[in-house]
Amino acid sequence: MEDHELIHQVLEGDQSAIEKLHGRYVDRIFNYIFMQTSNYHDSEELLQDVFYKTASGLHTFRGRSSFETWIFRITRNVIIDYYRKNKKRNNSISMNQTILDSMTGSEESAENAVLRELDVDEVMFTLEKLPDHYRMVLQLRFIESFSIKETANIMGKTTLSVKALQHRARKALLEQIQPGVMNYE
Image (cartoon, rainbow, N blue to C red; front, side, top):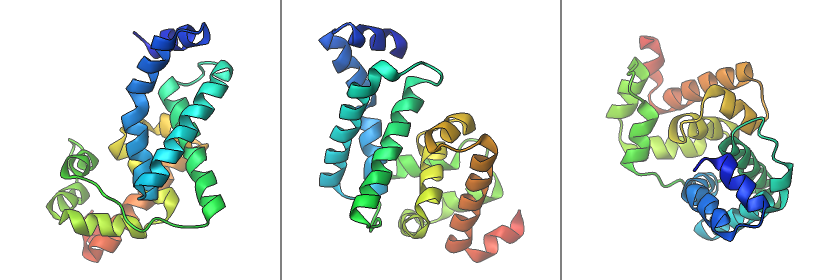
């Protein structure tokens, strides 16, 4: 069943549709939040905030974007609010090899080959040092596999600014991991 059908059923009061929609997104959203906060307890609380805001605002969803894009935009805003309130920054990120492999993609460029060969811990340590907006664009594009357009919608930016941000984020990541890598492009 498609998201728009489930949304229609949720708005009509169907409890099982709520559970299906929740089940469809809960793990991905939790992982996204956890990668941004590096705190399991805070991630659980933020996840609840996301689903509360989603449920209370579902009647405003107009379908101009996919539901997935819409809920990730809510998630992004909840994370931004979290950092504004707490004025803190990530201290660590936990990511397994499967997620890292998905960052490298199937069309392998020189930079992707270097990323693939590097120690996972080194990449994770380097990701922690990147600014939040760089980490966010890399996660949305390469881990969550959102398109440029979807990422732009989630981040509240134009597609051109997301392309530029993604380019700068990848470049910053590679320069910090291995300064000589950029000379091979």
